[in-house]
Figure (cartoon, one colour):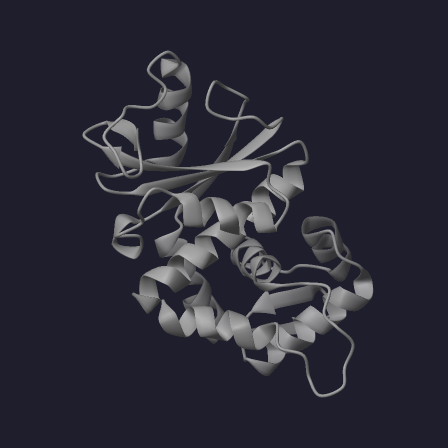
Length: 213
């Protein structure tokens, strides 16, 4: 994933003396995954999905085009063949996500859970780095869990999660379809978009850290 993360970095690099960008790598990744599930995406849909203005959307699309990942016609913007392969890499690493209700382990009204395949997150430690990535984008808290032998355990130890909330555990298993050793990152916020965009940032940061070490 090293090359894919570097491509995200290039997309959010300012061009010459252009204005500071109002989107960042999590917005780019969210847009790529959004495009992978749509035939065409209008600028208005991008604005709504990414919570950024139309000018920022035009700049984002321009930067994506420079990398050869998208093209546009009157019906909207779409992934090129190169863009589809790029999106597929991330969709394999982050194959599923869901939202779960507030429970004993979460403190936000909205809690976004993303599955990160275990091969991209070995040596994840106690999850404090992931918490820093999440808080950077406004999350109130985050959890990093490992799926092991049919149960979720806290990263860094073997303590089972959701012991008293088996319905939450079962819903996560059904929604995310984790395999042994996979990682689940849960980010919390009272704002649904903040919960999701902070989850994307946490996943990107984890992938970058994994590649570095």
